[in-house]
Image 1 (cartoon, rainbow, N blue to C red):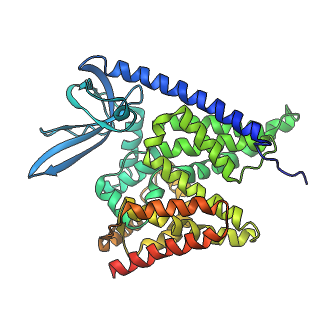
Image 2: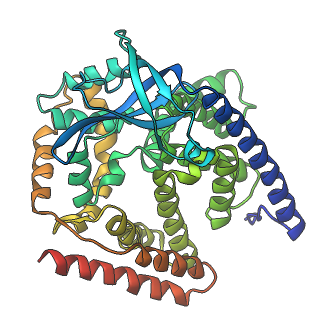
Image 3: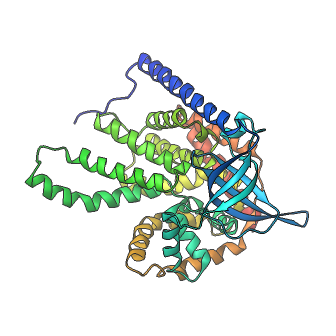
Amino acid sequence: MIEKISFFSSKRDFYLFILVSSFILFYSLLIEYNEYKKFTHFDSQITQVTVLKQYEKIKKSKTTQVLKLKTIDGITFYTSFKKPLQNLKGKKINIEVYGGKINFYEYLTYFYAYTKVKYIHENITLKEKLNLHISSSHTNQDISSIYQALYTASPLPKKLQTTFSALGVSHLLAISGFHLGVLSALLFFFLKPIYNFFQNSYFPYRNSKFDLFSIVIITLFVYLLFLDSPPSLVRAFGMLLVGFILYDRGIKIISLQTLFITVLLLLCFFPKLLFALGFWLSVSGVFYIFLFLIHFKHLSKIWQFILVPFWVYLLMLPFSLVIFGNFSIYHPLSIIWTSLFTFFYPISIFLHLIGFGDLFDSLLESLILLARESKHVELSSMFLIIQISISLFSIFDKRFIYALLTFSFGFFIYAIYHIT
């Protein structure tokens, strides 16, 4: 058996990679700064945006409409209106945005800007049409919102975000590597027999793995663009692409080196990802999976398959509690629900295609009701810093793995105690 080689065969290769990455980062920041200067050149400008989110915010008995907007150039920001607005979620609108006082750091992150609505486009986008088709299969608006989040990456209402956070399944509703993995497997499954038929007849000399992957990656890239490139999906897509390139060249891919290369390249090409919470949560999940597979590679594949969901749940729990702070007695069951989701996701897609999309509605409604018993668990961000520090030390010394497990299990005991 040919042994897989490492991407960095020497320190020279590593330093060269860092040098090239630094150049890419510098050039990307230069492009971003140029876009920033154009955006803030005038005190105000008319631009077209897509409404990603729309929700009410009540402060001191005053209600305002908050909108999360994204420009054609990919600039994402928030604005608000005191007057009631029609439902604009998913629509394209022309606004006058006052961005003259925004600094470069705010531009790279999510910032707030004053705006005026100038024109609302009445034509329905392809994503809106798909969301309307999904809604037509369901009588419950919450259920429609769940499926829209799953298929078109539409943001969930705040109430549902809290619900699924309390149940520990928020990661299932945010399209990421998990969903991309399922979609990739489905595409390979359906395309392989078709490709094999034509390959045997017309081009037996072709590399089937390379050709099939190229078709899959192009399809997923189009889907990524259609979804407006959510950060978690960008990470997953980038890792899929980097992983195959390394695999095709005989370089081992189940390693933290692969994750490091992917994360560094994505941050160099897209600096705004540095401030995207979804991106870092996605990276953390993959990091802990790789950490397990590296330190416990002596276990059989069956035991790895059984233990990985428990491992990821326990080690991601501190992130969930510190960032979201919602927990319920049913939260640990997310281990089971995550495993079942592997089957639910493709089946639900098929059911929507054949007109039976409401088959699981009662089940999802029951799941939502479970979160009524949730409570808020408040924890200092200092605990998360300790968690991350121990995790990094665990890369080099297996003894820190047991400290990491103990620390994370402490969070679990605290959360259970807090709600009982």
